[in-house]
Structure formats: C-alpha cells, structure tokens
Image 1 (spheres, rainbow, N blue to C red):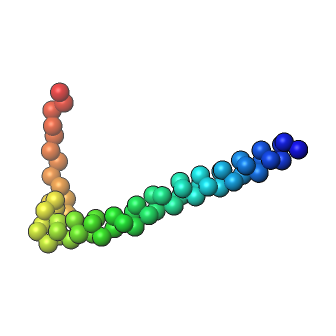
Image 2 (image 1 turned 135 degrees about the vertical axis):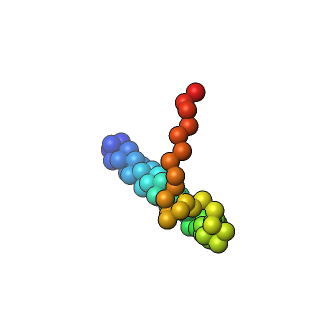
Image 3 (image 1 turned 90 degrees about the horizontal axis):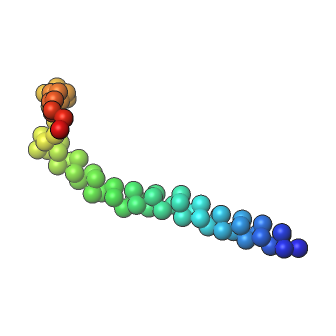
Length: 64
C-alpha cells in the first residue's frame, strides 16, 4: 500500500521538476532575445567585432 503512494508522489515530483528544468531556460532565452538582437544589430551597424572579409587575424598571447 505504501509503495503505491511513494510511486505516485515520485511521479508528481519528477513531473514538476522536469517542467521547471525544461521551461525555465526557455523563458530566459525568450526574454533575452530582444537584448541580444540589439547587441548584434549594434555590432553590424558600427562594424565592431568584425575582421577583414569576415576573418579575424590570429593574435597569439604568451601564456603566463
């Protein structure tokens, strides 16, 4: 009798937890979309963060 209750509670808990795990990041990305789009638009408009012919020159940094 107790086993059935535990299985039902674990099923409900797992369903709620998976809903939070799956839907949480999705809403975060949906809310961040306009901000990220504006950053990309700014870079395209001002030519920032782009190299010649779309290729960045290789810059070597000496390790510490």
